[in-house]
Amino acid sequence: MNTVLPLLEAPPRTLQLPDSAREGLARTPFGLYVHVPFCATRCGYCDFNTYTSDELGPGANRAEYAGTAITELRRAADVLGPDLPTVSTVFVGGGTPTLLPAEDLAAVLAAVRELFPVADDVEVTTEANPESVTPASLGTLRAAGFTRLSLGMQSAAEHVLAVLDRRHTPGRAVQAAREARAAGFAHVNLDLIYGTPGETDADWSASLDAVLAAPVDHVSAYALIVEEGTRLARRIARGELPLPDDDVLADRYVQADTVLRGAGFDWYEVSNWSRGDAARCRHNELYWANANWWGVGPGAHSHVGGVRWWNVKHPAAYAQRLAAGEDPVADSEVLEPADRALETVMLGLRLRDGLPLPALSDAGRLRAADAVARGLLDPAAHAAGRAVLTDRGRLLADAVVRDLTD
Ligand SMILES: C[S@@+](CC[C@H](N)C(=O)[O-])C[C@H]1O[C@@H](n2cnc3c(N)ncnc32)[C@H](O)[C@@H]1O
Ligand code: SF4
Image 1: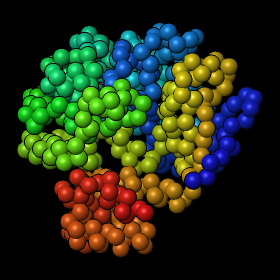
Image 2: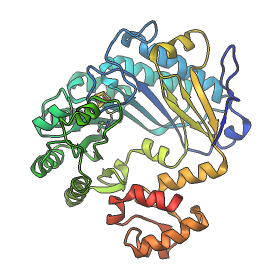
Image 3: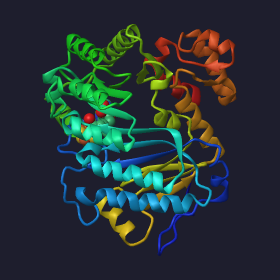
Image 4: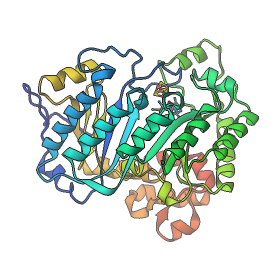
């Protein structure tokens, strides 16, 4: 990877995209990500860039944050213009976006519409914590043009939620999904985590049953990752909690896939299931296809035409840069064609559609044939020229990706 700083000039620090990166702007799907770096409390397993204080300095306080994000959106339109790409997806993530008043999220979306051409069928998602939405706030979001709600449920077992430091009751996520549907959201997702210390097979069954009882058309199920530096990692290091067990994680995954499939959900990425293709998260698909997106907010990453950059991490530093009339970029890199090809393989292999065999290196294609023999890649798809994970391959997706890209 070629680490460079051609985008930054000091002072003032402004972002300039090379012509090579602009070339494909009009014909490549383009998405906007808006990061909201606030949470009421920090869950013990989470290492996202999020802060529990609502006073982080001028421009970075919760009350001012929407205005600060809109300032970056304006700069984005300036940098990408004059021939702006059409926005096909907007994703407001966190942190907990719904800690901001719904009117603030509506204002961010209105600014997107004012600054960019927006596709008629634009997908507009916000993440939400179950306890931070109400029928009224969901109604405001829906009226503002949000089309999709992604709720962090994690588990239906009270003791599992306690280990994860979640603040909502087991039933609240399902109730919030119902409220979202009543408010007119066509697409609602629930996030689950499996493999939490103390979670039993029965707990996981109950979580899956609860999801199926909710009016959702999308489910994300993630194996618990013990992130360094988190409270969960410290508790495990002290011996207070056991590490998630690999065999248990594999069993839970199979159970999720079986139950979800039985209820009409199909996987379309290793950790994501949808009821029909229209319910897929198009914003995430845009990431996995290595398309173009601009990430607004502290620590947010962007990618346009092989140039990647990321913003300063702390909300106060982020707001200061914008207040000084500078871009909030921390660093950038230009991806070599070989790096981009590698990323395409790493992301594409995790998809249900897989990827064309010619996308692999010569060595990768040889190993793909071996992976078919080992039952990890689908033989019929391979014969038709694609690398597609089998059910067993999905369980070992990370290892297959490593094997085919080494
Ligand atoms: C940014 S959080 C989402 C939204 C919201 N703040 C919430 O927690 O309800 C996105 C999702 O990432 C998943 N996640 C976060 N940290 C994780 C970890 N260490 N292991 C597995 N999944 C994790 C959770 O399922 C979470 O809902
Ligand atoms: S999981 Fe969600 S609510 Fe919990 S700390 Fe992370 S972003 Fe915040």
